[in-house]
Image 1: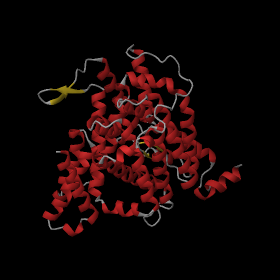
Image 2: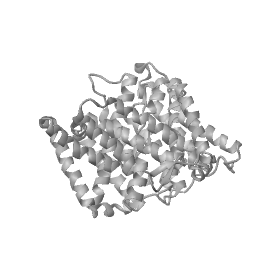
Image 3: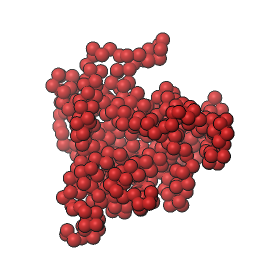
Image 4: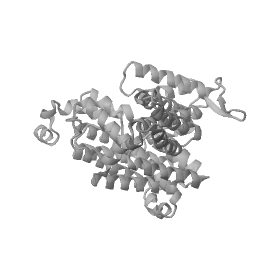
Length: 438
């Protein structure tokens, strides 16, 4: 058995073994397990069945990890992405008044396009065409957007007629509990505890039960919820996307964020593990193929875009070097299917998952440090991209503003030739989007 595993995953070559890989897999799962409850909680706001989303989240993550582990042989885990689920709900469904069924079809189309781009090698050209400044701004802006949603869910930030938003009543149990959760999670993070976000949610929930604000679950383990409310809905509603040109920017946003989020995560985790050779990642197309395939399957099952998780770095730091780590993560996601009764707690109390949204937003906002703020031709479009996402409550709008402004600032400073032709095309498309929307 050990010889077969060594031959399949290359333990000896990577200086690893199945025990080390198992520990790494458990570490990665604990670092990202929060998505099971957070994703279901967010997508249920769009009217989707929370039980079905919970199952779709676990199944799509498990399948993605299996493909990544067996095909690409990397210790990189995948699951429905933070930010993209918020975009799905708050921008597309609630903001644009698009039915969640149609939005799922948009995710399916973006996954198919991602797969085609990966197989045709066009993906590399797209990644190289988009300037680094806009890539970083997009990641940071999504982080602020997620954190803003978390602050709202916790009632720390509330609606106010005179100034649009204001500070909520911090004397109420919900915001107090959320603030405690942020402090707890932050304390675990600075102590470098793997799985800090997940443990933060659990400890906050227990704290809520101890003070009598959160009712304990009636059960912990139960049968797996039905997938019927969401399964196959994306396929049925594919014609909705084809007949609605205004939704193609939505599809592009799903695609854009998935491509660059996945590419950035893969390179970051692979660099930490020492996989990068001559500034290239071996089997990169297989890794991207695992991501795009998982997005397609996830949309069919009933969840938003699936992508690679930066939390995989926790498993790498614990010794994960092969795809066996990803298989362990997949097994744990499948086991988690039986813990659906815990979901009700987080649906009734969004303030319990709010700390996770806020802390993940903080981690994503670290991309701001990679922006050249001293060069106004970069700083202006980057800044507008970052602030527009939370202020307009739309990731797509923030991206579109950045793409419109970037070529203009580069032309004005005499650097028009440095802008890739694809960026000019995207700028025109985004400008048409704004005119169309008006």
